[in-house]
Length: 124
Image (cartoon, rainbow, N blue to C red; front, side):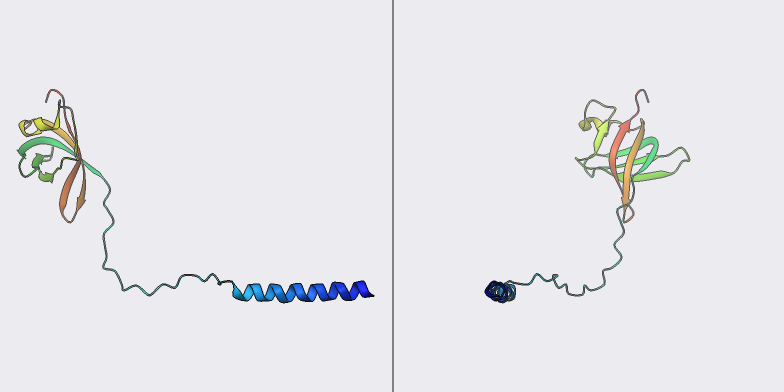
């Protein structure tokens, strides 16, 4: 009988201690987020597109070029130092490629076509 009382007393002490410890621990709560104001529609980055044709104009200072596609449409594209240029020995020669055939991979955002890669066709 004494053993039973001792076990009950130990259990009661343990439960009390456990309850006290639980009350002192910081309770993890989900971070409260404030409602965000509605965001204006931000268009997702457009997928890369391709265009091929004849290089009509290349402005190395403005870093733009005009390409005439097979349907006769002229498209103005911008490029940057990050634009990969292939088919010629180096990108510095891009300004001398007017009249050559090129394939351009680009993205369009806000009506601006930005070249990602320009490939100058061999023998064109």
